[in-house]
Amino acid sequence: MKNFTFLFAGLFLSMASFAQTHEITELWDHSIQSSAVWDDVEEEWTGGAAPEWMGGTTERGLAHFDGKLYVPSRKDGNQILVLDATSGLLIESETITLAAEEVFGGTLPINSIAVTQSGKFIISNLAANTQSVDVETELPNGMYKAYMVDPTDNNKVTKLFEWHNVGDEVYPGFRLGDGMNFYGDIADGQTGYLITGTAANRYILRWDFVNGVVADEPVIIELLDVVPAPVEGAAISLGIAPQYWPIDENSFMVDGHSTVPMVFDMTGNMLASFTGPVGPTQPGVSGGAYFEFKGKHYVVAPSTNHVGEPKNSFQAFEIVDGDFEAAVSLGVLPELGMGSVSNTSYINPVVVDVQSDQVLFYVMFANNGIAGYRLTYDPGTSIITPESNSTAVLFPSPATDVVNFSVRMTSVEIYNIAGQLVKSAADVDAVNVADLKGIYLVKGVDVHGLRLAKKLVVR
View (cartoon, helix red, strand yellow):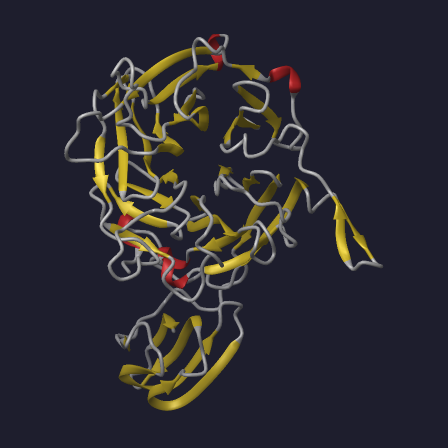
């Protein structure tokens, strides 16, 4: 798998901050598990409930803007619920009700939500078959629709587009809208794009916006691969309810029920994914967010469903040096999961608020609950000096049994990611690393008296 740093040239040129401290703090947790009580007699958790506003998978989307969380809900009509991001509590007075004559159509009239850079909300429906036709009228009735809700203009609703591909002989009828996201803005002088994709298929659809105007037709991107790979003879598919996270103008992350989070370019080529020893526990969940903080890459993604352990949980990862294969787990969230109720939507949204000194991120499992967390990072004390003037090369990379040096080394020290010395040797041109696995830092001095400081990945 390619190293994702190709997209971010100039980053991660030094290992000076190899010794590091991440801290994830729970802000609040409103879930079945968090409100349950341990029964000493039965030796099990009892009771517990999801928030009252949460129905039976009637809440599948999540967005964040300016200290508030926004959840599209169909429990009591088509609404956008507003939560205080500092407490996770519903602000009933700010609920946005969407009129039936303005937002309608599709299998589910509202399902997904995103937010533009300027704070406009984008909502979309779920269309089960974009080639569906009404039997009596012979008119298309499976349109995929997207709307903009403007909170600065009394929550005015503007339909952005409605799309179908009835009669299309190249592409089949799509199920669209299980997940949707937006990158950029919708305004004069601005550009952006709305991204969604097909359930149980391999296509991504992107609607481009230029100067506030949406393109008449989407760009259809065919994915060329997925992780895990389909069984022999099976077609490439994202599975049920794929979710999307735009990274920049040229790349996005997607995760479906049949896959783990994957990064693609806009031509469908996979750039990176969790193909190393560390990654989400199960592929049978959909969601995830990618972000950068203090020069590092991170992913927060659902890790287990209601049959995993802990049940219905998320996991935070540092993507070390931008390499998904070298991902390091920062912890499972919540530690005991959110609850054991089945989430038949398979949708588990994550949103982030990256600030100068912290990242606030929020996770939700339909039917089970919602929680908020804070991520901070302390670079700590470097275990190496930035200078590495030796021309020695380490190979192979990644290593499995032995790491070789192109120049004989008078001394070698290998440190783990916590800064602990795990192996040392003297007067060698190779070191056995068969008992190691993960990411390490190799320090040493070569026969010319020059210092070496390089990263080593062992599988």
